[in-house]
Length: 208
Image 1 (cartoon, rainbow, N blue to C red):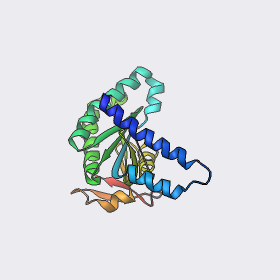
Image 2: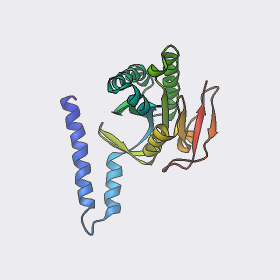
Image 3: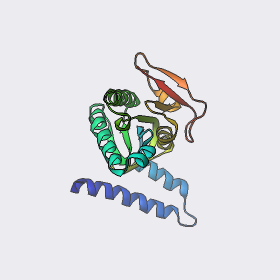
Image 4: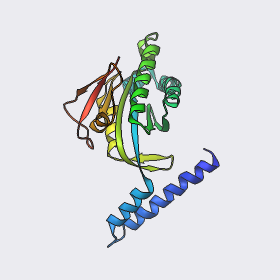
């Protein structure tokens, strides 16, 4: 991490911690403090969360080195797509990536490109070496704290869709995303029976 980035990230975190500490004081005006927090850190982003299908099972079967190899391969495949698609890779967590986009349509196009690249790669691989990608996308008001983290209902929904609900090769989106985008040509939406906490609706993106 560069020295400049450390200063920026630390300054944001320090300011948030001071406001949270103030919010914990008896008799404080929480609504006023909350407005200050949203004024300082509130932004509008599309959040894309990836996960690898069957990862825990493959770790148990093939070991931790295979675990590291698959993570490396997924990053090699996905990071160039993220950069080309106007995304910011905010953080990695094990086999998952959290990426933010100013435009939900950029997030959708990037998600399709990610899936297509992983599918082309996996078609030539043995089953244990395939990169089977799951993606969830949310969009809305979030709290972005420097370049360290992001919080909000749509963040939680995207994580839930990508990590728990999506199967291999699927892209699941919240109702907020569906309302904000024009679907790419040849794509359609299928409503899901249940929406994750924080979202009013959820859909499966059918893509070519």
